[in-house]
Length: 326
Ligand code: ADP
Image (cartoon, rainbow, N blue to C red; front, side, top):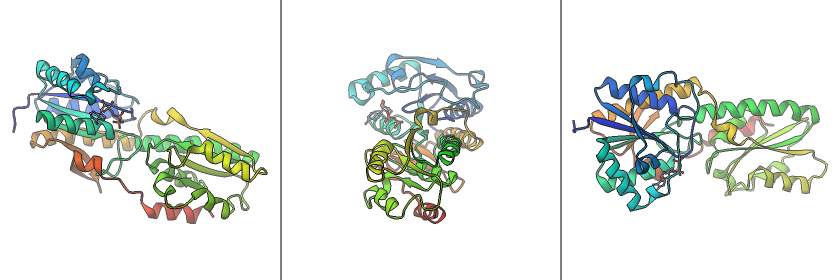
């Protein structure tokens, strides 16, 4: 094993429910294995401004159920420059931190990969994003909680949509991925999901209209993934309203409600397993890998693979939605 004595943890980029459970797991598993732990505040920014504190087991008590991240998160432009990363490296040396565990999305792992290569520095990443858009893991930390939040919100909107016989376009997050929209649509019995992965192939709205999306139903719900490719819920609603003035069209943008809240059991367990696995990875001299869980098995995914490969949408899910929304 290499000479790692002290491990630093940070959360970066968009926050996601379950990040705290991951911080707890990394901290406790590290201490269990005899490492010192330091918490780095505000993502990569904390490495530049030296906002770092020692973490003991009690620092992570009573946080497994809390949304957000006790380490805070930030976006840091300076870390994208070689000068910024040099300051970050000097801070790590000064603080005696020998390895990093970073929790975040695509951008965070990209930064980790660049830094690790530049300074030959050991980093293990955990996939923390509600978007579920990282290759190499079945789900990411926060995705299940966001999906459940969407489900509860759409159920409520369904009540009013039915009472007023309305057509609702509901926009959900996902960056350039349609996982939240597609699975959210299946979970809520929505009529359709408009997602970026297939927008380029067919005009989904055209298809919806052609199939007559009201049929005999007295309400319709369409989940739209926010993305320049889909154009967003507002844009689609305007198109439909123009073509079908007889429809009572409404738009709801769920927004940041999707990021918050207490993590589900699934996300707490995922974050706990991944956090413990990050320390195992460092003990096994692994570096520059993301921890993934596929088919219930822990896997080490090289950063390159996790970032570069697109995670495909399961076509079977799309077909299921189509079959069940007749
Ligand atoms: P997420 O991790 O949720 O995808 P961002 O894309 O905002 O969020 O990335 C988080 C942070 O990761 C950025 O603010 C930046 O500090 C770092 N980062 C992202 N891309 C790069 C890059 N190409 N080089 C260095 N650092 C990067």
